Image (cartoon, rainbow, N blue to C red; front, side, top):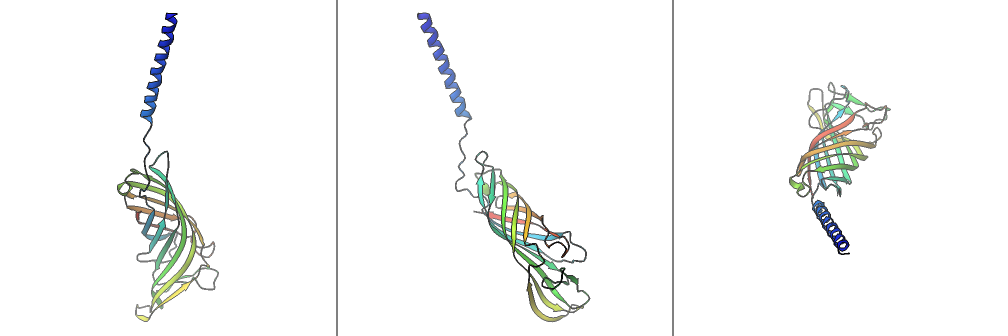
Length: 244
């Protein structure tokens, strides 16, 4: 009887020791959750870049510093399983400003196609700019090397944005003759969305450190409606300043 009692006690003691060891190992493996409340992670973004048109024919002559200017407010949601990764989305405004060289852009003409006419050998405007403005909804998949100190951390993001056109207009300044002498110093503005695809899809990417990242974007959809102009697709590269 004593031998049986000793055997049962020994089994109970060994089982207790093994259970205590397993509990200790589980506690060691359990990670302390990362507190990301209140962190800054690119909620507000301002982008300034150089823009151009892919697929632009030789008959369309641009010049100077054609630029893009974008402003977004993004809601950032970190992954619970990996705080270095997050998804972000939010509203914003984006605009492209394309500058032409001695070229007439007939966005209000009563024609079936959009006219880009070279006027270098006749009267022309000194500067013609085409501005397109969109209300956009960007989405980003983000990686941040140090989620607890995003203001000084390496960052990378890839995503897309869908936009709807708010306005398209040209701004023509100072009428000149073929020799470059000013005939009339005035500004003429014309506005029309008739020739444009009013919905656009754009692929985006960003990489950088802290508050400053380089960005690139490429419009998947064509700028103009099918058959009214060349199948050009705007693209831009530039600097993103972010915070909050």
